[in-house]
Image (cartoon, rainbow, N blue to C red):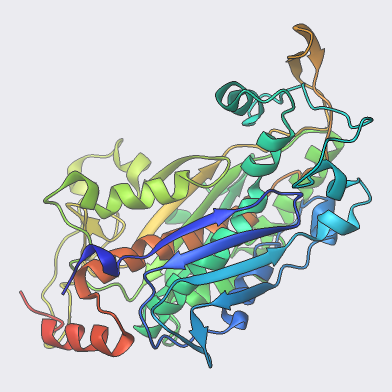
Length: 410
């Protein structure tokens, strides 16, 4: 049922203040219903969240699909996308000249030689030997995640076709938030168990909050915290949770290190700009507990059910790098944004002299936005594991493979 050619793979290209960002996704099976609206919904969600900076007022991300889709269905061939950068023309900062593809740099163009602590500026300059750090800033920017969301939304659409839903919510911003999963688990579980929407109900509820939280009181406290942090000329990180429901048992594998779904999920989260840690299930907290409080008791399987239910889900839906049939739960930990209104100590690489950093437009926090990007990267990871088990060249072929599997075999 599986060969490497059935796997999804995407590439993004473009710079934050260039004309556009580009993406190509290969491996999507044929006959998957897909329209630009399926993608634009999640591109719009990427701009959610209190504490965003000025660029949110400039961009209005809409995807243009160039290939791989005909009459609202995928063809099985590579899908290509474009998203225009609103800042390129609207920002009044001369980006068409500063980021020109051809010609010489403007004579009066300022070069960026002051790296920001915590950003890719200095590491990128040293790696690629740029005299001007602008290329590093523009490519390492979180603007790239817009195209990542576009590409991964196709993977998400594939999962939805088979009843697998992805959602997220924020649990902490800076000093304000919940300390342990037990404090939000009941509310989260009530949302994902409501009706047949699964994790979709989770993200739809979170989207109604200014900070993408599912607790109104905590939302108010976080808004106040963000306002105070802005007055302090500082920035905030935080923690969010991504949940995937409808996942069948048996995705991933324990037989090879690179097939373990736990590792793939953590890599997916930490591949996003500014994400510095991730856990599957109650990973960090479980390290402090005895085994009797960590491992999830197994209960009898009902007739026709795919999976044996677990009384708890501290493991986050995987054991041995393989899905158990319980909801997948993965949390991401985002550092504070490194562009601060308040300058930090740095060094001018052109002179070698110590200098304070300068301020460029930035958010106070973008944890809510990061949670929606994490939904996309997790969907892509789970979709690849799904295709490894059930893959085919078309959606009807995948359905046949699922039926042949028996859905509940030992």
